[in-house]
Length: 372
Ligand SMILES: Cc1cc2nc3c(=O)[nH]c(=O)nc-3n(C[C@H](O)[C@H](O)[C@H](O)COP(=O)(O)OP(=O)(O)OC[C@H]3O[C@@H](n4cnc5c(N)ncnc54)[C@H](O)[C@@H]3O)c2cc1C
Image (cartoon, rainbow, N blue to C red; front, top):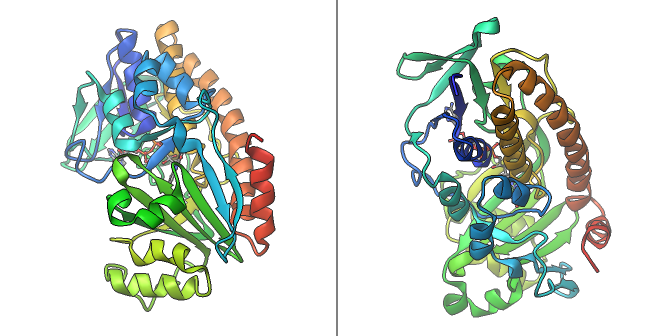
């Protein structure tokens, strides 16, 4: 391929894009800010849907390897009320492969495979240059020109301003994440409470979700409606102070549920930001966006799936018609905007119902989406 193509970011979007191009024998430069693949903890599990993330892996020739690594039993979902009574307990059928879970680290390594990522290359901004492509600037003062720069650099994308002036806004919901290691031996009661997949408790404007990861690790997400400065009088690096403030917020909930917070090791503060539903931009030759950079939405199981499918689809389209790069990107954007817009609406409405003044709304939502 004669075009010089760069993708900024080696998350699910950037890696799916690069891996599918690689499969088709097309060169791509992957620019990643992190100094190494394991520079940061990779995060929790991702459930990859059959028609989205799994389709992307199929396009990358990686579906069989995904099936070997993923945890179909992780599709189990249990819902409790705040007194600890089990309201729902869905177990997947043995052959159910609709949304199996995979550790983010395993997915990253699977997608990385033979790719040659340029680690430690942090992009500061991208300047589109009309029909001549775009200039990528780096934190070390250097720059490089490419025919196409694909911004897959996540929520706070440095590529996005090249095409759109829109910034993410706060949803009003904050998530504080904690985790437990070695649950089966160290916390067998909590291991049973969480089960093989996820367990969730919905209260008034609050939720607590725990999810089993591989290797006996459990991630716990405390979610609540709060202003952005809710922690103004709290030192967020003081784990005991955060724990005690969360225990106050969830006061009165069943003891075994609160034990998930009492036993959690460290606390990570994640206010949830989103881009406006149906975020689009004026097509700009030489630059486009994928994944969270294009359509950051609430974390309700769609973001990584869409990111990967978009990466795979854009790569396939480029490999299939390498002569008119700009026309390929223009057609891809239309398709991405339409699909992402539908999911952004669904996930925004979902967040309203899951962290809501009426906990019955959360249960009703699950009754609609869970297979009976
Ligand atoms: C708690 C939580 C749970 C979630 N669960 C799910 C789930 O189950 N299923 C699902 O589909 N989605 C889930 N999501 C959403 C999902 O994590 C994101 O939608 C997905 O990671 C987006 O992928 P991406 O590649 O677009 O961006 P990212 O994953 O954010 O990757 C961006 C990459 O770009 C790099 N980068 C950033 N800036 C620069 C720069 N200036 N220069 C170079 N590199 C840069 C970053 O280091 C990173 O590697 C969840 C999100 C959260 C917060």
